[in-house]
Amino acid sequence: MNRKALITGASSGIGKALAAEFAKRGFGLLLTARDTNRLETLADELEDRFGIDAETFTADLSTSDDVEKLVRWAGEYDVDVLVNNAGFAVKGDFADTDISDEFTMLDVQLSAMLRLTKHAVAAMKQRNKGTILNVASVYSFSPVPQQAVYAACKSFIYSFSSSLKAELRSTGVTVSVLAPGITRTEFRTRAGIADKNNAGMSAEAVALIAVERALKGDLLIVPGLQNKLFVFLSRHLPISLSIRLIEFINARRGLKTTADRS
Image: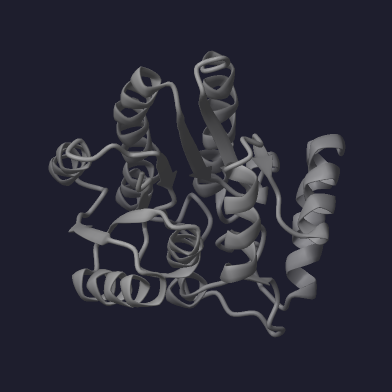
């Protein structure tokens, strides 16, 4: 039986790498993002490399209409794995950023995630099987000046996912949260964030760990020893020291602010 994985934000970065990892394991793919050309190119590439079927659906997850259309499209398939990966960050002091950008970020990272998960959970429970993988961040566990709303979104994702996993106990449906740290993707360049060092894990290394552990049903997936150490310290240090830790790390990376995409 051909299992299906639906992946949002699949056209680049971690989403693209996750698509390749699922394809490598024989999953058929349902790929969505805003860039039609990239999506179709990726689908063709993965079909050729792995002999799987890959379907695409262009959608802007900041718009309710597109999310509803995506939900209806996904409903035509039995989705075995849902990966909520789409997202972006707003960089800068909250007093200076555009509130409309923050609301758009909430729509993409939270509203769309909730709608897709609501739909997927109902169908998965009926089949007594399924996997949900929500992409959060090491920032889920610490305040992040200059990315206050982004970090709060990621904290929401971790808390929601943890609660949902408990609700789905004994249903055959598992929920996992991927919490990567600095990852070498195009996102950081688009956000105007550049390190003096080529820091971070590759998207491919993150995706390999994420897929292996999500399919085992692990809740929290933190790839890489440094990221594990950061999460451990963030969860045990006082908030004031957690903030100092972030400022120290970003100073070492040559950043003038602590803003980053993780």
